[in-house]
Every structure is written in C-alpha cells, then in structure tokens.
Length: 163
Image (cartoon, rainbow, N blue to C red; front, side, top):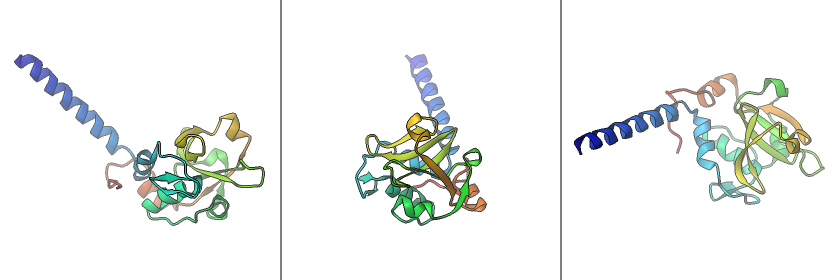
C-alpha cells in the first residue's frame, strides 16, 4: 500500500512539474489567447461572454496594454504592413471573407497558425494554409514594437500571469 501511495504521489508531483514548466514557457499573449479558446462567437462581442473577430483581437491586445478599435477594417489601417514570410507572433492577419474588402482579423500565433473568432467555431486556432484562408488572405500588420513584442509575445518565465 505504501509503495502504491508513494508511486501515486511521485506521479502527481511529476505531472505538476511538467505542467508548471509548460505553463511558464507561454508568453503573456499566449495565456490570454488560451483562456479565450472555445468562447462562442457573438456579433459585436468583445468579452469572454462572446467575441466577434475584431472584438477578440481588441480584447487580447487590451490585456497586454495595446488599444485597438473594434472593427477589422480600422485595425487594418494601423501598424506596419508585413509580408507573410516575415510574420511573427502577435501580428494581425486580415482576410476578405465578405467580398467587400477587409472583413476578418486574427492574431498570428506561429507555425503558420492564427487565433481568431470564427462565426462557426467561436475562438479557435486555424492554419493560414487552409484553402479558405489562403483564398481570402489580404495581408498582415505589425502592431507591436519590438520591445512590446519581447515583453508580451515571446516565451519567458518572467512574464506575469494574465487574468
């Protein structure tokens, strides 16, 4: 019995250590995005009760101290244009899903993927190489300065927990 209890405690201790190590490797931005994954889509939504695409990006950036307007077209007017080959975590990616110009926005999270509020799936992670997004991609904008990027979008054990 004592051996089973010791083994169970050791296993639990290892799980906590592994969990803590992986959590501390997340950036502040990753933590905000992770907490929002699965939130339902709500037109005009800008909170964890429901997001639309620009409400989601506005919410995430607000949590890291950057103000964005609540409209994808207005967000597209901000920052510096970035080529798809030079994307880094935290860049905004824009799409024409309506046929009338910029109508969808997400946040590049690395490895060819972006976080966004999908009208059909809620807040989710999608691939920029999905045919749907490839055919509707408009461009990307860098909103964060290099200093802000290093403070909130890179993995660091010094990053504070985000509420």
